[in-house]
Image (tube, rainbow, N blue to C red; front, side, top):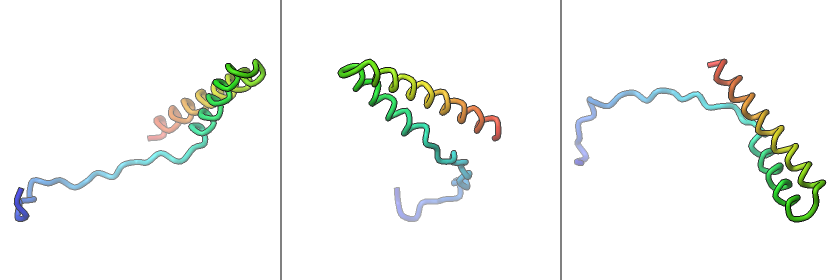
Amino acid sequence: MSENADQSDWSEALPEQIPRPTAWPAAAAFGLTFLLWGIITSPVLLGIGLALFSASVLGWIGEIRHEEGRS
């Protein structure tokens, strides 16, 4: 493509709506870490990891559904 290419067929970029920051992905990562660590070491850590991972995934899904309803 040459430097003097015709730009008349270009369109204006549409603004994207960026979702607001959330802690749910980090909580899911911690929950998954505890869950996998609990498989190796202790049923207590397994239970904590399972509870934390489940709660964070449900919270994350709930927040996504709330964001979609707001758009």
